[in-house]
Image 1 (cartoon, one colour):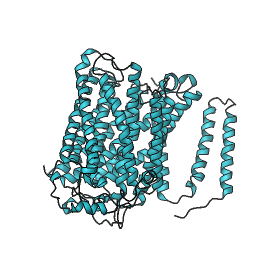
Image 2 (cartoon, one colour):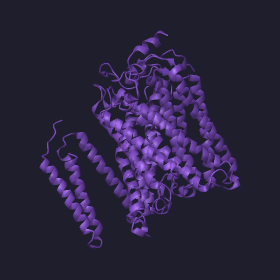
Image 3 (cartoon, chains in turn cyan, yellow):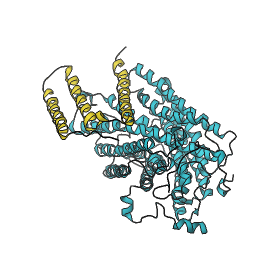
Image 4 (cartoon, chains in turn cyan, blue):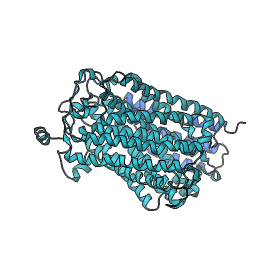
Length: 544
Length: 95
């Protein structure tokens, strides 16, 4: 236990100060990351609980568990909470916040107080969202489509819209902070071509957060203004255009998918390189494809509107553009696969999640191409095919990446290791539960089951039972890490600074890191992922 | 990072201009200009936005490349939003 004693004495960001005040007024990016971690976990379990209720209702063809109105509110608030209060901040605000300054050899983010402000805005938005929920909820679907949201719904649209407006600013500030930090705070020698791909991915994400989020924020304000003051923006009776809402909404909300998936891709690049003991194949292509996804992701949005009544000509343009976004995504998948080739692969928990990500993201991405084709999209629009597709991206992709990253950097964040056997078991349970939940939904959608209904014809029941069964397995898969992460805080094995033998500046400082990350500013003289120069540690969790 | 210092007279001048333009916008809305209703309102609003960006956000005197990059990308994405939406609006009622 000599190492434990040494670690316990060493001053780090966790034991430097104690007390609630030292946390709520902190400007340390690592502490703010943990504040975010706790907050988004809270919202994840609220949103997850709603998902379980949805699946439970759909166990039988009859609407027998909740009222139809309640069902509308459940899927609406499941979507709003998961998208705006979990997925958008998930990797950037926790792992990104924690790691980016360390990965670039900086003491903190460029704007530490803005970073804390971003968390408070998130909490304010989250509190307003919870208020909307307990007051009776919202039933417009997470998309707030007009004229339902402005003229017909009698639920708490104004509160929910303003909650997302406020949380949007927290996202903008995080993006702003990352852009400034990556431009201005890199350690000497750390050129753009030496940056970890995690940082590249977050840079691309930040661009979307900065340029896209203001559009959704103002759009939701316009919804609120039309609803309360009857300004004619979207309502045809007042001289507006309901499709304008959809244009503005998707201008942000399609790129928002890339806010969720790009950071996960960053995590996968780090994890894959480490557990293959190789430099990422095609580093430059993977880095630039992140920027490519961020830019092309902005010019595909109207593929959500093919059957909404937009012009055929613009539908053709958006269909072609949507196919284009498949190119940088495929570049990543092929390069990751090539990285594995002749690598020294070990199947530790983060690697299991990362490999799961590649498979599930590929399915999600390819089914996205189905939806981009004008003819097939008419058949499957607003069916469970769409639900399955975007859950493969958001849960199979983004959440798998989040879990990979959380396990990979857990020893860095806490100084302790989670139980590896339980980790692998949970990863397996998540993979099985996920596929059982969502693969049947592809078939259901193709057969014609529409989304957002609480009842369905009896012939759809078998596939729905499979999906509901899968969701309970998935729930176990997410509860397990919750339990063993907490357990490991006290009982986890105390590990050294770099238990994986990983490349990257964050592994060169102690675990948990000191408040200002490095005792002296590191100077980078090597390329990223120099695994040929790093010895493989002989650790139990790296055995196959 | 040399910062250009603007006089407070300048700030007040811009602020008064913005206020006057707001009153003008409100006043013009009472006059029916036909198809020019929207054009006039949006022109005034754009001019006001340019004033805010140039002076209140200090872009006119910014020397940093990063600031210019941010402004250029913001404008680029605004053009994307408007032009790609207009593909829909301009061709929606073609046969």
